[in-house]
Length: 434
Image (tube, rainbow, N blue to C red; front, side, top):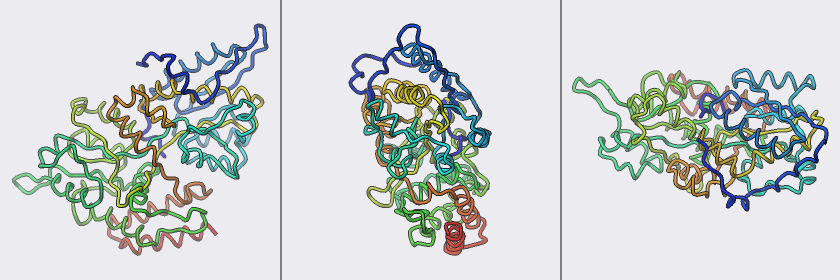
């Protein structure tokens, strides 16, 4: 998903966690051994987490004196185009960070190395990682990436505004009926009848981060964009149409959403939340620090919960970053050692502490430091049930998102009913899938 949301000290690490490590510690190179240089490209190196990542790299080099890591930072906005060009030219870095939405495009073009041989050589496996994250990076039983961080979408809510509306902050809405009932109470007018507080920040802008939040609504209702085999669109199915109707009517009928929702993106709604003009918002955990940076006074009232679900067991959409090894890398074994190092529990925990980027393994979420963090505890529960929906691995995913975004905006604008908008979109997506 889009980097609009992805940004953010490090506690002492104790030997007690050694037993939790997925992979064996890499052997120290013999004195005088020729040094190998591997390059590492990532958008994370341009963010607030960069000092922590550089600390991890320095520790890696100390433990592996035969390997030098050359970081190559690149801003998120230009990164996918830049990396694709370098892949095509055979000039890519050895280790390349990839957002989940770029992963399959690169895989389909043959840019990425199958990790199974280097993992087998190192006696490693990916069993402790959340299975949904591994499945997303697997094709034909070949694993092409390891997750670096991942986070399901959460419901942010303001406990003070809940109390003022007569709602119990300890009982956030768990389904759509409860959500709508709370939304009506949280939308407040002044003496002149002007709305001064809205319940929810709806993301209607046709951009990837906004679409990710809508897809989370789809998943919460047991709906999907496509069939699991990527062969057919499912936007014309009753649950998908029901989702679009409920979502759009929060704006068009219920009026519990601020004006201009059709053009609202994550940053816009985060600002409204920080100004206490909206009481609820959907976003990834890393956005909490961005919100608090705009209004530190919210620290005691900003709470998070799983997003409301219509059916038991409904999965959550998520944002994730992966690390890959280029198929053209001349040093795949050394590159694998770096991925192995980043995957250590102590390094995942340290990254969470400085950025709130979610760990990729349940055992890390079970550590005392995260269990003591109320945000971390909630994210651990959500990350245990992430959903990889249909067409996410399709080479047409970007175009499918655009089609779906057009349909969403048509319902918000009132130019099409939810049923017509999604049936038309379904036909367009099926045309692409042919």
